[in-house]
Length: 255
Image (cartoon, rainbow, N blue to C red; front, side, top):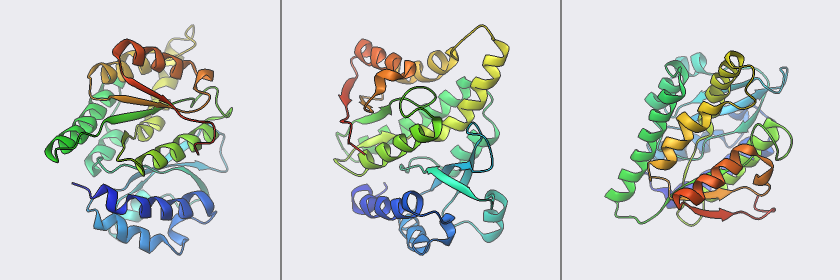
């Protein structure tokens, strides 16, 4: 199992320097090599980074694949070398290369995406059970497409920082649902185009999140300050009460 407590704080610190404080492309940062070494020591996959291309509209996000131990050829195939602002980097290590590739290339429905999420959550649960750890699997809830800071970009930044901080303290095991967001955005866009009278994409709730919550695998929700401004977060709060999932509302200055 990934030696979470031993390296997570150092990884988070360097990650913050590279992706939050620096305007350089991540590979140009002086700490990049040290970062890769730390990740390689965990013998796990890094995952995707959701980036915003500065030359596009706010709705256009791309997922750059970042895998530990890739060859130069693989990196060149996966990276898009254009000026981008990294707004989100995964903080958890229970995703595999196959998970990311399946999400990027195969997932065409909310149901497929849900089954992938359940597989990842089950993997976390099995690892905790194997290590005889009593830690709860949790999830961060809050505004993304509506409410919050007023834009997807700023809301994603808050999500990223919150997940990173929670995963770096108190032995939290937070489900990192953010890699699903670009695919979910595209699926929702297609669904709403086919259902013009609908204001919200119902399958996000009914086909993706609800079965995950009802699985009983997620035991706690962390709500970002201002969650009440999001219809989706309000719905998650209602489900938490119904399903008796533990709720913790984070303070305004948490990140």
